[in-house]
Amino acid sequence: MAGIDGWTRTYRLSASKRIAKFSALISDSSDSGNITGALYCSLPSGQNVGPVAGVTVEHYVEPNQFYPQDTDPSTITGTTPASPYASLLGGTNPAVADIGPTLQYAGQARCYAASGNITAGALVCIADAYGRVDTPTSLGISAGNKVYPVGIARSKSTKVNDVVLVELNFDPVTTW
Image 1 (tube, helix red, strand yellow):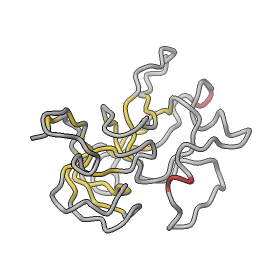
Image 2: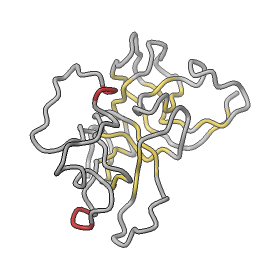
Image 3: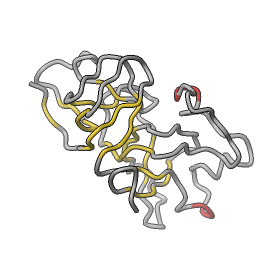
Image 4: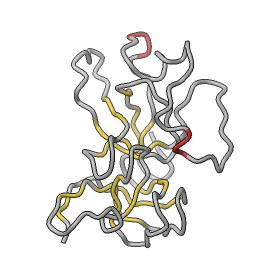
């Protein structure tokens, strides 16, 4: 399936959580009950975690849930949906085993910035548990450490929650 500017794939969440669009998620192979062939993803636990699975292209929330365009993604991502949707948005409900967020994994994706320190051409990685991105330098990752990148920024950020265009590349690198 085509995404914003690249390829996408639907994943299944390991836990029932809402997720804002443009959030980077990580691969999760911990679900041993996988009998459907579904791929699992989860929210990052913090900064520079991986492997990166992709970036959400739309909000992943229960039906008829609306968030205005400038809503802070940290007020959406990681919150638990109300019943009866708690089992719909991930977890172990076999009736919805192949339903989950659509993640872009190739091409250029939009990501939320965790700071105003991103410049075009900078390597960016997951910055927080909301799936926002930032540069390894801004996150205090020193030279010689492994980085799980989301990709290369193609635009800049001037403040928190700016939308940054990122050329996706999830290959781990060592900082220089």
